[in-house]
Length: 259
Image 1 (cartoon, one colour):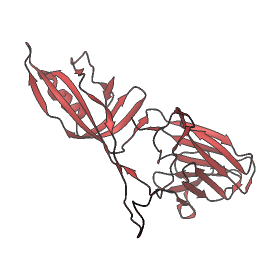
Image 2 (cartoon, rainbow, N blue to C red):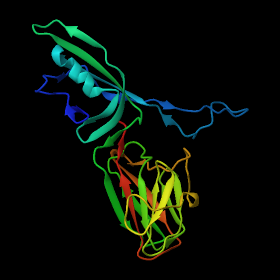
Image 3 (cartoon, rainbow, N blue to C red):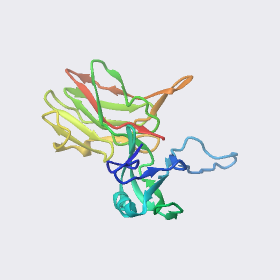
Image 4 (cartoon, rainbow, N blue to C red):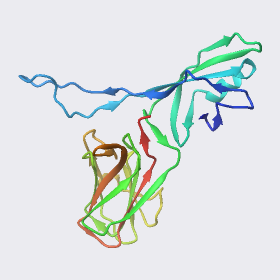
């Protein structure tokens, strides 16, 4: 069942109905650079690709008298959800066609662009793990199938030479923190802050002491596929420190999905 901005499109109040010809799956395409090497056939492999904004088409049947209400709900942009997953959208077109029915009804095609490409969990999750060794694996975002490039990472001190490395090779290094300090990195913005409490906002800006990179030039958490069982997926990072005492890490965000 689709909802748009919290309102169901299968709606008894307005007699809206999502039609069977709805294209329920967003369409994904990857933009890959082509780099040729002299004397080599083909192109250089392994260059990071980006996924274009995907498209979604939702067909809704409405009494003509409630057509304007539907279009007002969809508006210029918003959030569409189905089950436990959601995606921000931008409206591209809403062509409407009157139907030959006993009472005036209209079929509307909601053509929506998902600028973030992927569907996300509706709810935010936080995974916490003590840092009791020089390198600690942390599994996050169960059932993930697309990269998460906006997770927030928070490390409680004391810890030095903090480095978080994703299975893809993406990485971020964070400044040292003492006991009673937390360093928080927002991978969506590349900014970092130190606080004296377990806060998810505010603090002293220490972004100049952070470095990050990876195959696509950003820190992101990508899916690991269990060998022989692609239905079992998760993200995993390795957290390394030179020294640590009473330290821990929190990773917060929403899992990402291809569909």
